[in-house]
Amino acid sequence: MSKVLTKVNCPHCQGAKVVKNGRKKDGTQNFLCKSCGKQFQQAYRYKGADPKIKHLIVSMLLRNSGIRDIAMVLQVSRVCVLNQLLKQSEKCVITPKQKHYKSVQIDEFWSYVQHKKKHKRWLFYAYAPETNEVLGYVIGNRSAKTIKKLLQMLKDIEIEQYCTDNWAAFAEVLAGQNHQVGKHLTRHIEGVNNALRARNRRLVRKTTCFSKKDKYHEAAIKIMFQQWNYDYHTF
Image 1: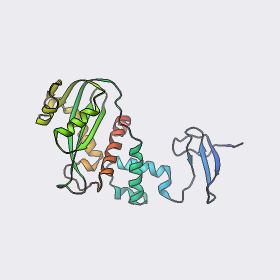
Image 2: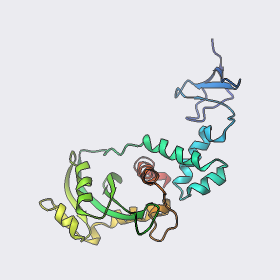
Image 3: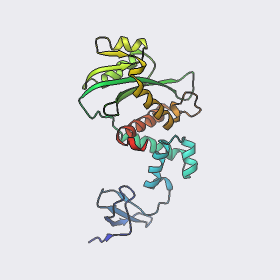
Image 4: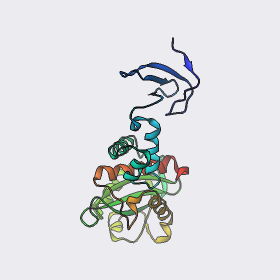
């Protein structure tokens, strides 16, 4: 029968109910956390496999650090950082907390991938001030078609009022809806924009930090919105 250890804490949940769980092929002791069910080792031959390092990668990403910066500070490879970025984004799901919202604000962000002039990427997202959450987002070109994709994501939600700036495409797509226009009606989402720019260098207007591939760009944004919705106090 396995003996419960008291001196080893789980790096995933910080739980103390940890037991020995066999050894790796190289003889390294393996542990199992009875609280969260995850396995781990006390020491890792490769730093990138350490759960603590994986957590730091995501934390630094959400604190405006670039891929090279993270790799240098944590002394892991850039490939390790990028792989963790993709793995973490796969766990993220943007799901509205309610079925009904009184008012939703929509705005767009300019960004780019690889080349500032040739590969522009516009991020459109919907924000609900009453719950302080992002309801959905889409990345594409700056067009009515991209806005329609965003609204399609919100089709199962009852929204009483949409608030946007005076860009003509919003009026075109939201025709027939309760659509209100004005800077004073989008001040909440503008505040969110400022907070997101402070946390993700890819969204800063005059940035030199950018993703070389769309999949990394989209993964970073997905993690950012997940963090906003469920861990806003850390922003």
